[in-house]
Length: 84
Image (tube, rainbow, N blue to C red; front, side):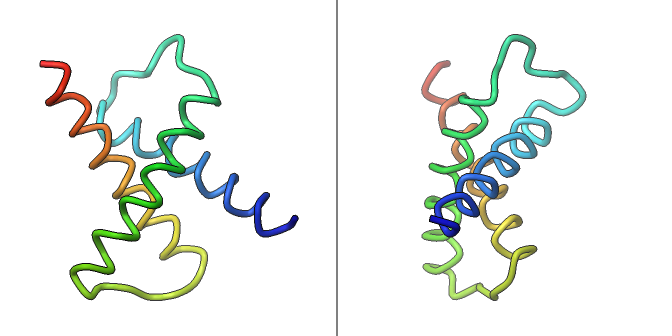
């Protein structure tokens, strides 16, 4: 149970940070916690896969947050390409 809560909190933080990094100074007006959570969770899986494929990795909370945030930014970039 605690692991699920931990995973959700990392995903929420990563989705929020990823949206700030990707959009720059512009805020995502009207976007809610659910969107951040979904982007963060999918981004964490994507980031873990990409970093694992590249052979880059470490343990710990900070690394998980960095990996998930990078995945969230990558996901947002891919979505922006598809939308155009």
